[in-house]
Every structure is written in C-alpha cells, then in structure tokens.
Amino acid sequence: MPAPFLRDPVGRYASYPPRPRLHALDLFYRFVVRFALLVVKVMDWRVDVTGAEHLPRRGPALIASNHIGYLDFVFLGVGARCQGRLVRFMAMEESFRHPVSGPLLRAMKHIPVDRYGEAAAAVDAGVAALRRGELVGLHPEGLLSRSFVLQEGKTGAVRMAQASGAPIVPAAVWGTQRILPPKGRPRLPRHVAVSVRFGEPIPVPAGADPVEVTRTLMARITELLDQAVAAYPQRPASPADNWWMPAHLGGSAPTAERATEETRRRVEKRKAERRGQNA
Picture 1 (cartoon, helix red, strand yellow):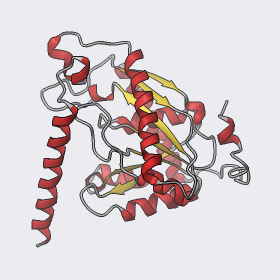
Picture 2 (cartoon, one colour):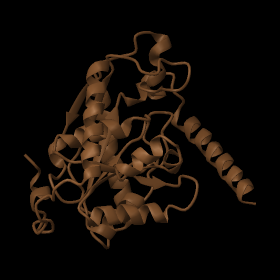
Picture 3 (cartoon, rainbow, N blue to C red):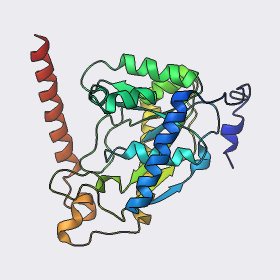
C-alpha cells in the first residue's frame, strides 16, 4: 500500500486528476522498460526492490539516489514500475549528443544536465516536470562515486522540491557497480544481485534551509545504502574480485578521499578543455 503521506499529504496532491491516457512516447518508454526487464531475466540479474510503496502512484516526487554504476537509472526505473510509474531521469548532457542514445533519451523525456557548467536549465526542466505531476530521478552527488561510498550531496534536489512542492523519496542501489564496470572487468556478468531500496518521503517546506535538508537527505540515503550492503547476498569470489567492495569493507576500490581527489582533477580537466574549446 502507498504510504499515507503520498496518498494525501495534507491535501496537497488530493486534487490531482486520474492519470491521463498515455502519450505515444510514454508507450515507447514502457516498451523500453519491458525490454530492460527481459534483459534482466536473460542475464539472471537478481533484482530485489524494497520500499516501492513509498513512491506515489500519481502526483510528483523526486527520487534521490546514490550513484555507483552506469545502469543505476535502469534499476531505479524497474523499482518505480512496481507502482506503475515512469521516471524522468536527470542524465549527463553528453549522452543526449550521442547519435543513438540521444534520440532515445529525448523520446523518454529524460532531462540533460551539464555536469561541468551551468545547471540552471536542468533544474528548471526538472521543476517543470514535477509541476506536471511526474516522477523525477537524480543523484545529489552529481557524479559517479568511484569509491562506492556516498559523496557530499549538492542542494539541487532540495531546491527543486521547494520550487515544485514535491516530496523527496530517498533511494539507494547496490550491486549496479558490477554491471558495465571499468575496462578490464567482465562488462555484462550474469547472476549479479542488485538491491534497490526506497525510503520514506521527506517533505521539504518552502522556507527550509537547503543545506540542512540536504544533510538530512544524504543521511537517509546512507542508511538505505548501509542496509542494502549488509543484506547483499553475494560476496567477492576471490581477492581479485573484491574491486567492487569499498575500501573500508576490505575491498580494493579507491578510498573515498582518493576517489574525491581523482574526481576533482577530472572535473577541472574537463572544464579547462571546455574553456579551450570556447576560446
């Protein structure tokens, strides 16, 4: 059953009309989701979804998740399907310029984000989608965590929630880092367990401090992530296979400090390249 907050949060969403007839592009999106589920079945990826009842069956909400793998959005979308919902994900702008992925992402009404420049346009597009009653998915960290540990969150999710009146549903994924990993690893291993966890929604008052609410949000995501890791049914098969475990749990992934520094250097390099291109 949906959480009471999402059924009727002090009347905020009670006036929403029944979901309209699906647009042709949404039918295409649902076909893509079905195809993704077929791939999951063929690859025997063992997906465990917990807490999907915290997602509203209609009306807006922001799904805010950690980011450890390139297919995080796929499995979050599989989780949202439990409530019959489609998610408009905020994704890196580069993917929208690709000749294959670009048209597909636009057809599914996902939202491009400039990771190295101005984010205002993406925030505005996300708020507009929320005001239309959509589910919007994003990663408050901004960039993928190479340490598989939650990084510091940005305030964009909270500001979008305040501008739209939508609640934030914290979420965590685990196991996705093992699918399409860095070069030198099996790209599409079979029989991988994937955990998707959704937490209780966080209402965001218009006058709340975005920094404080973001801290609360990241703490909730951390709790869900810790639960997912503790309950994860698989372990590295050998010492050489422990690359997908965080350093603090005995794995060979880079420490959070090292990963943060590597990310900082990569971002600065990309920004410098962009400045050179625009000069």
